[in-house]
Image (tube, rainbow, N blue to C red; front, side, top):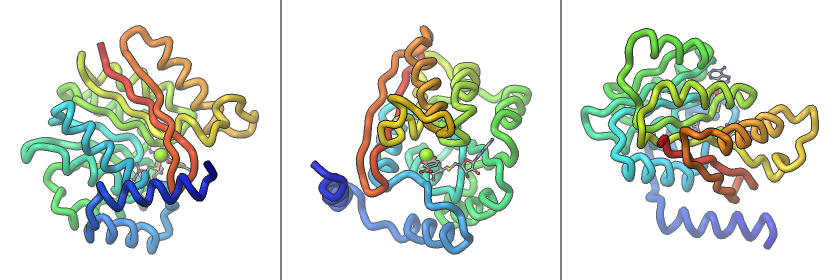
Length: 221
Ligand code: SAH
Ligand code: DHB
Ligand code: MG
């Protein structure tokens, strides 16, 4: 199997299981036009997150790393009408693009974007006494992933789901180069997750149009 074949199979899967979606297409177009990096999750990964949110009956979701709001829209669509997604984004520009995309998706009422470093946002959420989140999606700056795991455990409850993107990095996680901060962080995060007695977890490797990476999936005990 080569990369081209993996890409073709992913296109086949998305053709079967992901409906054409003008709102998400427009979200990607607006993000690209605003010059945002095209590093959002794939459509298939969006469908997976949506299904996982529904499977755990999520009413309150926390996301770290909004970018243009693509994954936020997938996640927020899985919420009940009175559900809520809080998404943390460092870049005011990314947050502005995401806000417009989320409004356009009709999800403005359910989604709150907290602008600033996620570590500050997380402390704010705790300080204002947020109810526990049912699901957390970690997808912000990779070097802080282990910190984000610790925070996720503070802000969830038994049975909550914690997902982290980009924990395989085309296999670089096996033996990261010192200057590959994302792979170094993924390796440390996966080790911390595996050693964390408060969760049961696995990493799922994924291949698709953007190559080989993976997500960690954990359930809080
Ligand atoms: N979840 C998005 C992609 C996120 S890309 C999607 O799939 O659609 C990672 C995002 O994390 C970028 O927008 C980046 O600006 C943001 N980010 C980087 N460092 C951050 C930090 N310290 N706190 C919060 N967000 C951060
Ligand atoms: C990249 C991909 C991501 O999913 C992400 O969250 C950050 C960076 C990348 O391919 O560089
Ligand atoms: Mg990612």
